[in-house]
Amino acid sequence: MKNKWLLAAMILLAVEGSTVHTAALASHTVYAAPEDSATGVYEAEQAELEKQVKITKDQCIAIAMQKVQGIVQEIELGTEDGTIVYNVLIEDKKERLMEVKVDAVTGHIIDVGRSDDVFETPEDPE
Image 1 (cartoon, rainbow, N blue to C red):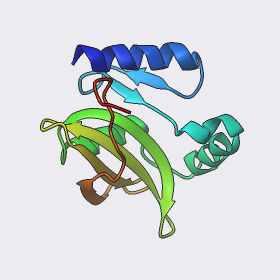
Image 2 (cartoon, rainbow, N blue to C red):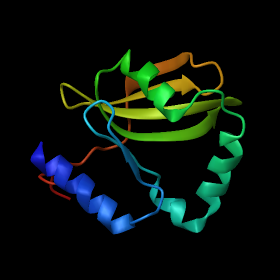
Image 3 (cartoon, one colour):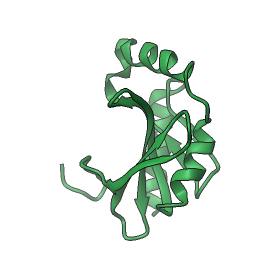
Image 4 (cartoon, rainbow, N blue to C red):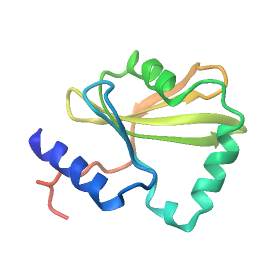
């Protein structure tokens, strides 16, 4: 567990002031933007989508945590079949990476399932 917090601290130091934010929610939540955010395209898309949402990231996290308890690893705003959704990645109590999709306008949960993303801890070989 200490390694995860060390990794989070290193990420925060590495990006210093970019799109990574921390919040004290559900055992220290870390918000992370995808790696392609440096191009500026990601930020522009996010800004456009954020104009249309009705629930905040914190409200979305509270909704997602009703279905999957654990530590939020990432939250990203996107679209799916014309619906604006928050994709919330949560490491559950069994150390599985779960994805909860929340409608960013209504707050309804669209889908819950195991994430296809690979979650690496510092102990994992690369």
